Length: 288
Image 1 (cartoon, rainbow, N blue to C red):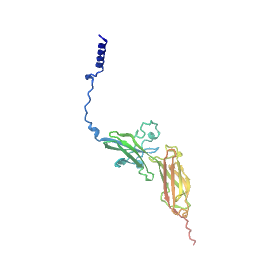
Image 2: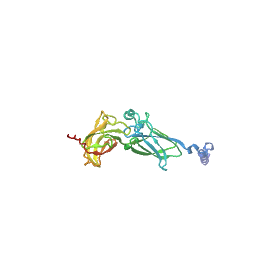
Image 3: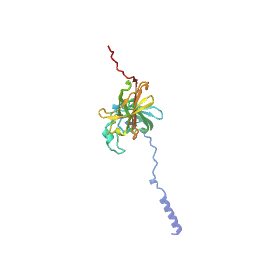
Image 4: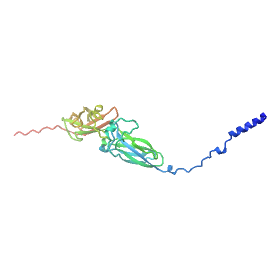
């Protein structure tokens, strides 16, 4: 066999090897009809939980919290309601170490708000919380935006909204009570977290780490700052003050109590106004 013939045979052999075989070709798949369920609304549940910052869940003891869920694009209110349940297990929430991915508030029953929607497409919503509803003077508000995706539920701890502050109430003297000039009066106030737990020394919410003090005011001017001390018998904070003369306080006085925690940003204020009356002069008996 001549070299030319050998070369031709080699070229034919290579061409046969490189040529794709019809039996090995993968036929193109025909277009399949779309899954109609992907284009239908899907049930989607969101759980919202409102808590006092550094504290427990806002439950029925403090009137709970109101939650509103609004479609960001259309401004339509999708759901609104009151968080239902109790403050939760204090030992589990405040004292139990846990990993970041472990539930913080839902390991034991605690108040929450749940809403279910039939969603056709991902929807950006604003979740707003306001409370505690039983204490309007101490009520705070917080909001956040989250995506809701059809069929993807948000459960366990859910969307957690933190409200900052304290419930500070002046309990003595009673707000609006008339005070007699030159009298020594005891200012008595309670301080609680927004979830309703008492602030006291050596507790989970240690008053020794919180700046708690009172102010005696005439108009907008602070006349005196009062150092409050904890009375364990009454579970209240107290300080004496001296009622000024009516001439010095023609419109009465204002008592203000402030609780401020510089470590976590919680601040609460309670205040009330009191009219001031003249000194009581004992009547003299007439001489016969």
